[in-house]
Image: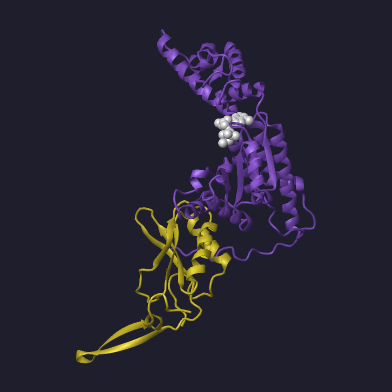
Length: 139
Length: 312
Ligand SMILES: Nc1ncnc2c1ncn2[C@@H]1O[C@H](COP(=O)(O)OP(=O)(O)O)[C@@H](O)[C@H]1O
Ligand SMILES: [Mg+2]
């Protein structure tokens, strides 16, 4: 099941040049770009691991692409996303994020229904991948 | 949230032009302007200007050939600038970055100027991230490594400089579209550096040698520097400056145009003191802008016989 989070995730995977163009767009808007990765793809998991520091003063997207290549070498079997942070007053938050790498197999989620008092149902989604320990979930 | 359009991914394949007007390209690309500015604003440096002109011509032709499908590889653009201190290497590197940008060989055209200390770390594991940070900053532009030979310290086989060299070489080879590296330093030391690091030599296509300035050129540089700051020499000061240049050259730590810049800074200081102490009434613009002979001849350069000690 293809995970859709962040921008562009209903589109086919972005190519190298498309990623680069998006990153350049972010940099040209003075947003700090960075990479994050995870093997815990639950949509409510906002705590992805950082890959290096956000880039505040690299004018060209090639800098991030170099880091993306390095990140893929190690975490190519996981989700990797580009995060663009707008530090301008009033925003001070993430302006754009999009997935740039995903595992070859995405097993998706199991939906658990818990029957509670008074015929109430509580729903829980659980990534199948999360059944295995962190670091050994994909590939 | 602003949604950027899926940007310029498919550059429309322009039809291959049947002919290219090199003259026209020379003008519209802005290369002509950069070269004219170089000619106008930098005094002397005839051989350097000639080499840059040749390089620009080569790159223009190369660009035309690429458009016609006659060439595909990005040409090697890494360079070495050799010459003594103050001969204009850094200044010219800035212009070169602009030139490469206008020709479309670098995307941004900025210059990141570094020395060994910016690239090489103090302990194990420190160097690679440091070098990579600098490389990332320079991407889309030009990385200028001053006194590049300090990266190589053969007397210490564990020197971390070697690590920086290896990363640099790799990026210079594999990311030629992303940045251009210019190595700078004294000619002889640079030659030795290239001898022991054939990897660098083979990746550098353009060697430009910066000659020392003649006394006359230095005087003109002095006048130009003053003019840019809205100062000028009176007649006697011009003579004194010419005298200063001849003496200064013979003394230690002479650094061509940089020595001139420093001398002028001190001359302005003396001028200010002179005005402050001697002015009887209000001063006009001319008085405030004129450097006179005594502002120069007070220099210690005149007190000393040539070849004697540090100058001030
Ligand atoms: N040909 C020149 N004309 C005018 N100013 C010059 C010229 N060459 C150098 N300068 C000035 O001299 C100073 C030192 O030049 P720089 O480029 O830093 O030399 P280098 O990098 O070779 O040591 C700078 O302030 C620069 O503006
Ligand atoms: Mg310099």
